[in-house]
Image 1: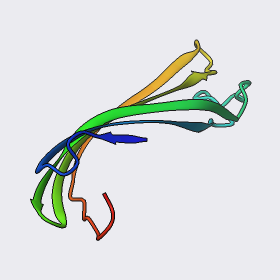
Image 2: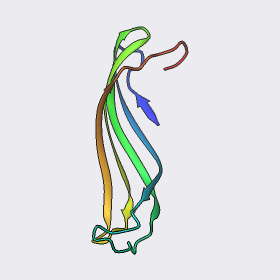
Image 3: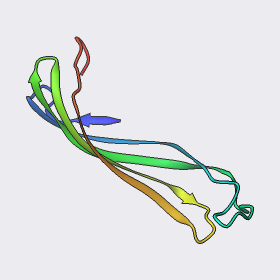
Image 4: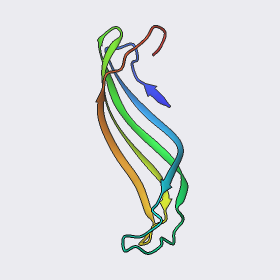
Length: 101
């Protein structure tokens, strides 16, 4: 879900959030060559969130900068449970088509 603030303005900040599933696929062997005793495939819930800003350059063209992060359920590893998250930053150039906003 994305919530835009001031959508018709030249500069439009926004927040994003969503949820879904994360699939982990682990190796069948450990680094030392022994069989891996933990489950090979794991599925956990995932929650993502972030925010950014759109800067309109032209009526149908904008520059976008955004940062997002996500967290998933606890993953089973040989050493200890691991909570997984990953922060992502990127610029983009969105195109707007008639009737989309």
